[in-house]
Length: 332
Image 1 (cartoon, one colour):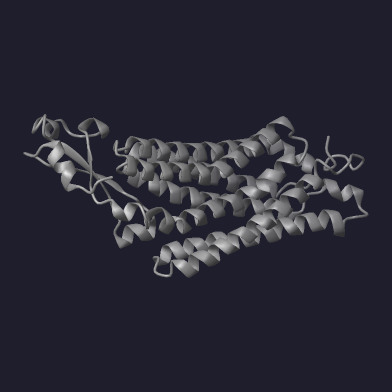
Image 2 (cartoon, one colour):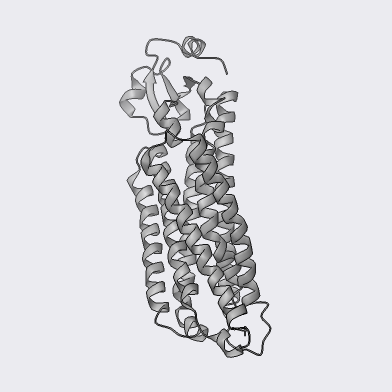
């Protein structure tokens, strides 16, 4: 049992867990504000919709922090002498889930767009991810509506299966997006040291930006399943929205460092035919021994803005040997 169900128990695994989550969330929000300042300073020419997404995520983060701060203040300060008040739900602890869910959905959809482009507009893959995101948003909205009609934490236990479902869906989406991006980047390896180094950097960046959100979501899910009568999961759940915003801003802010040095120096890299999947049979039979497939890393201004290193497969070099075509490309 936790203090939220019995005022005679210590507050460590309930209000204490929530307070730790609020403190960490406040620190992460500070990091988010610094990243937002850097973004608006360095990327003034970005399209309006990207700037709008940044403003939306940062604003939702601020609102969420206000809500969870109000929650902990209500229980530990306003209701300090009211032990029975710990069992009663306050509106802010329920409404905060809405902003966490919306922020997560925005960032996950943004990364799904990356999967869409790098997978050459694969409808099954991106459709599955979007379906999971919509399911998570729907479940989250239903959770908020249902919880608003409850009065105590003991009643909140009735919708624990829905709470677990939301955490499981969010975790699944994070893992699927990160694994899809890493797999597609791995498939794009060229066999040349310099281009492979660029791809390795992108893979590491994808893993690093998605690792914290995934780990936090998994920790929240495990805590919820292992100890449903406590609020230990709140320590992690309060931070998830902030981690989504920071990973989104980190991706936008890293574009220049990832592309300005190495990628801008790569124009055309020759690939063996076996290095790329999805080539039509007609294309491969035109020149069995001399055909080459090239991978072009788009470094135009628009691609740099969107941080979409779109990898496009084009057939080149018919009638030329692979060695001749490689000599014309820049050495790696």
